[in-house]
Amino acid sequence: MKVKVAVNGYGTIGKRVADALRKQRDMEVVGVTKTKPDFEAKMAIRKGFRLFCAIPENLKLFESAGVEIEGTVHDLIEDVDIVIDCSPGKVGVQNKPMYEKAGVKAIFQGGEKRDVAELSFNALANYEEAIGKRFVRVVSCNTTGLVRVLYLLDKNFGVEKVRAVMIRRVVDPKEDKKGLVNGISPDPIKLPSHHGPDVQTVLPHIDITTVAFKVPTTLMHIHSLNVRLGEKVSEDSILDVFEREPRILLISGEDGFTSTTKIIEFAREVRDRYDLFENVVWRDSIAVVDGELYFTQAIHQEAIVIPENVDAVRAMFEMAEKDESISMTNESLDIGKLSF
Ligand code: NAD
Image (cartoon, rainbow, N blue to C red; front, side, top):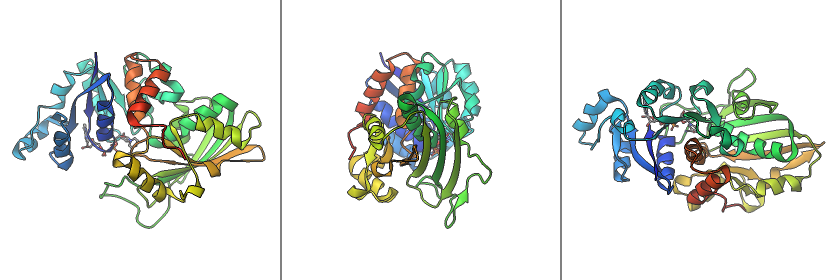
């Protein structure tokens, strides 16, 4: 039997989640929602998704635009086991009463506050805690990128202290209403950025302080990490841990990966929408100086949380053990096969 899933909000994250769910043999996408009959709505239909209206009052817009609509979000959620809410940040919490009323489970995204759900989720770090849960929040792109590596370092060596700098893409590539054209913006100016506390929603015992800056690029984020570990480590032992994790893609400057532009150029060759679901870590950035670890990673904000949403569904319905779910998801999305 397949779990029946709705994707509420077919935007940057929603369309990727819908495509990923389609590749799972134990899940079925019953439908997706849009608020208006734009090209993304038409693309959803062209790709064979059943389309529903996210805002019931907007139903007429679809009808007058001649876009085939199957009903409202209320009709859709009556027919599913779980909703993956991919609406804009802070909108998911407004949708929650609708899920409660319909008696369905729901997954929220990182733009929501932690208290929208019972658990902030990352598949590597706390899959088991999501078993049987009704409401789960998949943490944001930056937090997912941090949690994956910190979980692995903590498990293998113990993490004593983390200091991380996030250099953030200002907006996603499709955004044409806002942006930073020619500046670098501390985000926020006052320490810490929200990323450290957000990491602690998944890994509460990690001592972490983060600072962040927005820069005028849309492709990826960059993280520069400094980690004090509980034991003496060599660069090779760090590499060994990262090499064994499929959700980390190792690259190197020697192969011409001199910036995020080159990473994306590579991804264009190998992945639909150039989606990189993995943390992209520069091998040659890994350095141990005075007993402390430093490395640099790039995070494709549009893609990194997608496998986590798929695994969250399996955990919430107790459909698979952690390792089984992660390897099914990895296999379906071709994760773990690209390292250099
Ligand atoms: P988006 O703006 O690209 O997509 C959101 C979609 O939801 C749009 O299609 C919008 O029309 C629709 N929508 C608006 N109001 C709605 C409503 N009331 N009900 C249902 N749908 C509605 O946004 P996104 O980038 O996909 O972000 C979605 C969530 O994922 C946010 O919480 C965000 O913080 C989080 N997130 C985004 C990224 C990223 O880089 N884009 C990365 C990780 C997590």
